[in-house]
Length: 190
Image (cartoon, rainbow, N blue to C red; front, side):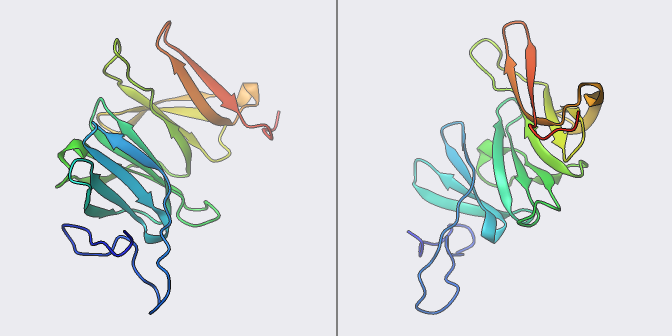
């Protein structure tokens, strides 16, 4: 319910802006953390809510950079990655990481050193591959993919795509053979 309170802070889930006004709830991305918690972004309120699935209660809100738009769960390191746009024009994007996500409380929010992040990709785990060491970041208008150590959150390598005229838009990974596939933007300059 929009008027329900967050357990740890007593904030409203969807705060009322004006008296007698309806309470709009704006939601963005959500991720399931070990079938115990759901982390869900509220862009207009610059926060991520932590929902306890079993208790069906919102436990807490975590303040993040303005306009959180995409969440991803890194199961190997128990962290939730938060991509925020900064504003509606995506002019000040940032990437933050919530550590110890499966604890449900007392998590730490880490600001990554990456500027101008347009998107990121963390390969999924499966029954055979249950630990992922690297993630990838794409920057705005940058014909490159930046390989990141998921444990230290530090850049490891930049893979230049300038000679291919490719500004990355999305990635996919196949565990069989370990191949990565990069989708380029349609409007990429050749």
